[in-house]
Picture 1 (spheres, one colour):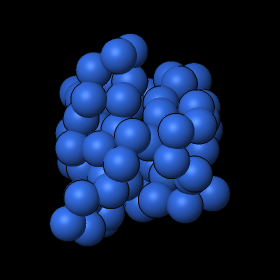
Picture 2 (cartoon, rainbow, N blue to C red):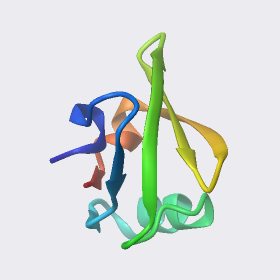
Picture 3 (cartoon, helix red, strand yellow):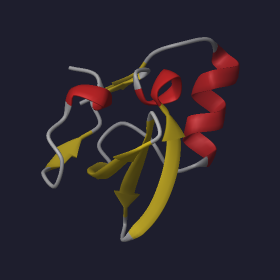
Amino acid sequence: MPLTMAPRGSAATVKKINGKDEIRRFLKSLGFVEGEVVTVVSELGGNLIVSRKDTPVALSKHMASRILV
């Protein structure tokens, strides 16, 4: 399921990153790679606050929908 549908506060493992090479490279540079554990902290203004390795990262829903968990 896409990261946008993951319940808040629960940890999920990244299974796959969809999208063009440019999008996948961008998400990889932020640390979103297959096997990484991420947690949806909150949703603010249509964007997601996601924690990975105890570091919060803000993602647009468009980018978060490319991450499958």
